[in-house]
Image 1 (cartoon, rainbow over the protein chains, first blue to last red):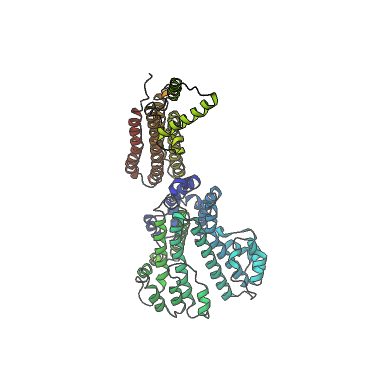
Image 2 (image 1 turned 90 degrees about the vertical axis):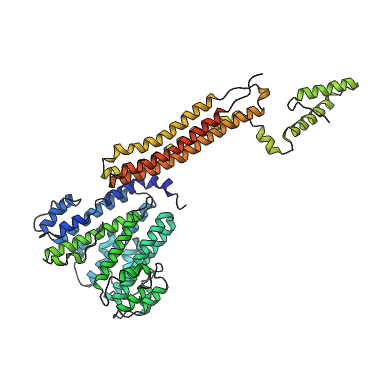
Length: 351
Length: 223
């Protein structure tokens, strides 16, 4: 019953909710980012980060640091926190936490298949995979030649199996097909997650519906913009849009026939929440769109913490942490390449 | 047939019947007498409750001690349920939040103490109510006075029990939010504590009304 979760939520979820709120207080603040943006070298960054919660993870690194090392260690911290929460969770919270990682699983699958297509070594690819999306038989993905084998050999045992029904073909894998496969899988995953949250009901379904609808709409816009000028037909494009969200169904119809960015902008400005995003961009510019979308996402994720006794805080925390890691990667890259003027281009402040 | 003013005195009515029969000179046989007694008893029941509804009869025939004892049980049982519910709601959030911010533990035990007070109210009222139980002679057990005393203790128990149940829940939920907010920003603690104090006043309202209710639970005096 919506409104009375406070009576029974704490039986199973109270401890973990308090823990995730404790983790949230460890996210980097604007003051930290200002310090980091003024660093001269990666060693400075390491020193500043040692004062934050990342200290224990970075202090044992040997001296010539790479940006990938910093990102890897920060991701390791996120993985540790996630595993701590997952091992103490009961149903349905444990299923919810597992759903959060399926997106990373999809990315890992696509990474390995693409890498195999370009004749890379499997071990090297495995090191680049996101640790949250690892599953047991991931190395055998390198053996598959087409999608049917991919499914039959490896993916049927993973949680991604139900998402494959729409995209099993017997064609050989190539770059275009793999991107379409990635987007089809992600669409099925988002719809499944949305249905799961609706089933949970209460505050969880309301808050997660909002966040997932924004995600679906953002992906629709990105698919549209990335496929302008490619050989992706309009019907194919329409098949990649999810079946929920603010843009469904009329916005999707209009997006499917758009041929350039100004038409996309025209479609999006009919929806008030997205009008504010697109009004920040001047005509013909799309580089800042990513950052605008990230800012909007961070705003919605922070709002999830305003209410107690629901599962949305777990999802919001994981996403905010990933955004922070993206910020750190951008700052490290800018510092390493001596382009500090561009640092503020892509850093999204969380607090 | 009989305009008997003594509503409960079967023996008197039957005796009078027999006396009048003796006066008229007809003495009934034992079988006739049994049938006659049964008819008189039924008539007396009917006049007593005003109609032949069997439910209202059944309710009035429940002993007032049953109601009083159930009231005492509810007063302590449901109060403790409310206190326990509130304590676990606060406690689980407090333990989780204290991992990152250990300084909150000692201050936030106040929330747990407010919940515990709710259980203490229940115990006190249960003890007071049970001192109000007195025995009455079995002839007067269904007097209106007796029934009133039994119902008063029952109602007092329900008032206290359920007021403490919701009070415990309220204080528990606020205590959970208080612990989480204190972990992030310690200036919020005192402000949220004020909300908790108002919440715990709800239990006090219940106790006050319950005690007033039970104060007028006077059983009929002997004789």
